[in-house]
Length: 328
Image (cartoon, rainbow, N blue to C red; front, side, top):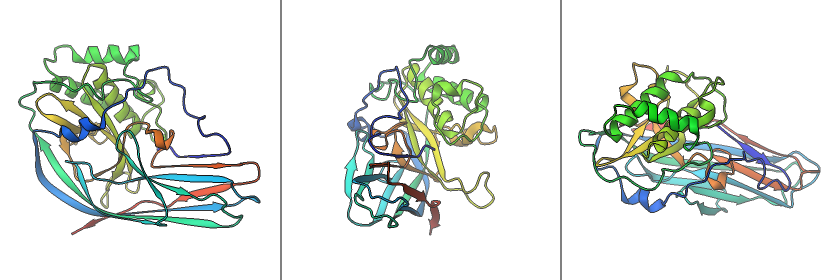
């Protein structure tokens, strides 16, 4: 996942240049069109904790310093936020164009040697969902269909691949299954801790969950199937593969007559788990942000940090590992 601490006046640089047009999805489309075919078959509750420490290691103090931390929120039908506690309590609640929420802290004037502790605690209810895809016909959405940063759905190579994978597929459900199977089977998993985007996933550099999700979303949008990208947390039980890496990315897509359907091609890359993560929402997924590159995070993931001047000030931001515990 991407993390950025930006120095001095670099408030708008360091983002990758992108020649594609940026789509502007409507938030109203998210809340007014839940899945019509979702069945809740179980649920879990989690207590979740995150701590960040900000320390001034330099000789000077910043004239301006802000940090934005993405907040877990309600996201029906996937999850419900039961409680949230944030310290320090002096922050500004920010909501972006996709409905993501952030706590914005102003630590301007932090003296040399001083530090601030940010502490976030949540109680979250997560549903386990299954979907009926037997009737896949009806109207589509206009939102979440265009290219954006990391979702290069207008790229000729992605357009061609989406068309190739759609041959013989009679409806959007069959097309989506073809995209999911291709991404899960053909990408080579390698942890890179950056989102190189959908187009890069077609190259030889390998891919982790961010590329798996980005390519699936891009292929879907290239064929006119609305799709969304999520970053969040994955609860991994003792003995699970890659336990300890809580940060994760996955997707969902809008199917006619059905609604939004979740997909995790990364966890579905094994044939053993392929069905488990197609049109099913496993209750170990916890959403933090919607979108491959939310504007408030400025190209980062989960939090972003800006300060200036940088010539005499050195600020360290250290995040401890997420603590995720199931609650009976």
